[in-house]
Image 1 (tube, one colour):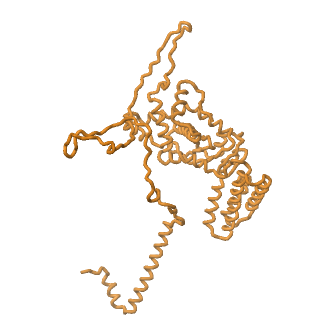
Image 2 (cartoon, helix red, strand yellow):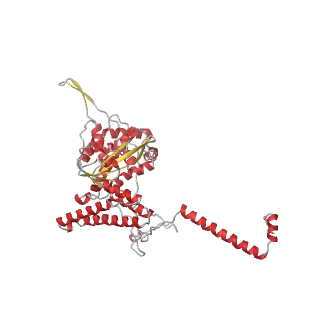
Image 3 (tube, helix red, strand yellow):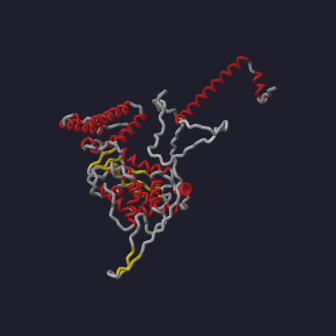
Length: 453
């Protein structure tokens, strides 16, 4: 039996009402419930807005049904063969078995051999030269690191695990112990990388000199921390070179420090004012401009906002189309169209907008009017700064899985080793082979750089 929890006083009031009054009360309560539910739905949409254009998978993963199966390619070199044979029948125990070639089954399997630590004792013999009247010592062995307790192979693996694969030192310690039974501490690995970076600074200087003489550079920056203090990681890159710098400042003195005030190339960047005095010419990223335009168009649906977006968007895409077809038109026709685009852009920038967002765009175009369509005047110059953002992404991933750097020495090691690593990757060179060769050469006293850019 269900017992009502309604207070007795409320129940007495309901008994005193007529049937029509009770029906009216029910309808009133239903309207209030409907309003509350509608309000709840509105709040939910505000907190969790639906996606406007959800990405749909174009096709199902994998090949079409009924396709020929594909497996891992069989290795061409076989190191060992292991045969499994029968002496007696496993079912009846008969020993009179005859081998059938057609029933033989072959299976190829690849595996890794568990590594082990190899300890080498280097002995450099000393001699007395009666002619020179002095002591002479034999040179270092080919893979000997003076005063080093860890060999070049383990050190180069540490560089790659840290800056390419993004492993923290604690996980590297566990990996070396489980894979090859090497006992090493996290601090020993960290100090080793700092020493390596110090000896490889001569190689980084080669990159820096080439960057200062390059025709163009992409530039970008992102947040960074050194022992919890806010810093900025800068990158200066092109299709073959990468230089990183970690500095406290986000101002123009950092580009001037890296490139010097005499840099005569073209700088490609976003609209940050720190790049205003960098390079003989500048190309501002049109992707950043289009992104802001789209955001302002979505915020304001007025006729002025929609018209401004449509007009500027057409100018930019006309510039894209002209750059794509520059080889298909006569040079004088191309120059005429470039000048026409510049006039249209200037006309748009001089428009007086009442909308504050488009007034901001107009002011930006007036300030950087000569830096928007530089890619039309210079062959091979990109209209966006995507390359710089792609090259800064490894550092962003590194930032997400670590505390960045805990000391100035660690930050310096990050600059040198990451600059070399990313430059080698752009040039399709083997980083491990280069690091090993360069470090051994410099560590044994020869400071001549081996990097060619």
